[in-house]
Amino acid sequence: MDTGHAPKNAITPHIIKGFFTEEEIEVMLAIVKYQKNSKDLSAFHSPIILPELSRMQIELMYPLSIQFKLESFASKMVGEEVFMSHNSYLSYTKEHDGSTNPKLPVHYDSDNYFTKLTLDYQLHKNIDWPIVIEGESFNLEYGDLLVFWGAGQVHWREPVFFKEGDITEVLTMHFSTREDYENLNDVSRDPEKRKVRLATWQADPVFAQYNKDFFEKEDALTNFKVLNKGN
View 1: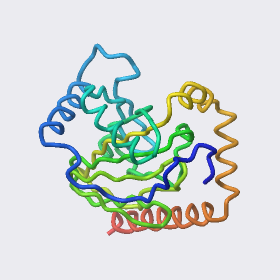
View 2: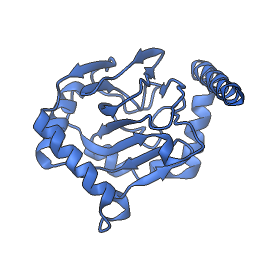
View 3: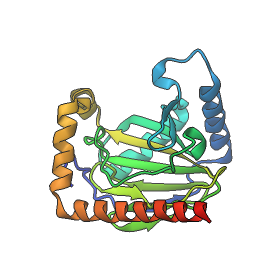
């Protein structure tokens, strides 16, 4: 997808192992725990539940040392200086909505369309839930870092049935230039501009086919659950 803000270096989706040290992981998990339970944080840093996805998300307060490490890596990957313009701790489990199976449909990162790199870091999981990027599947294990361009590379999660207790936790990070963030972050959230971006996606026959395939699998999964429940 031509966003008008492509990274200088072409980004080929790939997995990096061992990016964070155990000490860094412990620090980030402690911050996640604190932000989940604190009653004194602003709404921006407090947990948000998206019931339609069975997802909790938190804008994580990264220590400066870890943020610098991420931004230095991202800048080298992109080919110019970028900073972490947005991030989320994401937890997917049916506990976030008792009736909805976790899902992540086919999409580009719409509100982050001006970003130049996306990183997904796998935390705890007890279920395999592949991320698909332009038709290529990536099944992350604990400690894996997935590198891709979420604004310009269409991606989604394969429809998978979550049982009670199944969960996956991920850190996701987006990187942009300061100039693009300052000029575009607020306007990117304009509802009318979102509609225009969505219409552009849907007009792309490749995107439309990925989307059709996704919902056919989603429907098949729903029918499978209904049949099993009946038995």
